[in-house]
Image 1 (cartoon, rainbow, N blue to C red):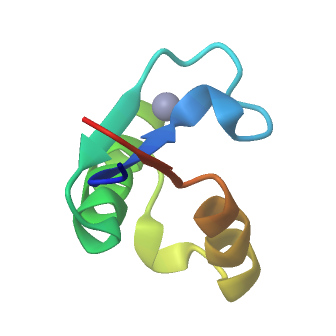
Image 2 (image 1 turned 180 degrees about the horizontal axis):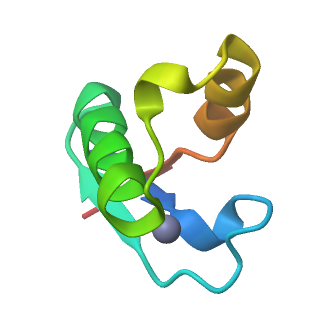
Length: 66
Ligand SMILES: [Zn+2]
């Protein structure tokens, strides 16, 4: 049964070496944690992510049972 969503940073193109991953109950929460991770670990500003980038990242969020 799916009751959580997860994102593994290494699934993202160019981030294969990153061990970071986030899991949360809702996709909305996963997005917030992804943005926080990108800021802290990769010095990225999520405010600058394009719609294309967000569409790509959205495909990497997977349903899981936790
Ligand atoms: Zn990362």
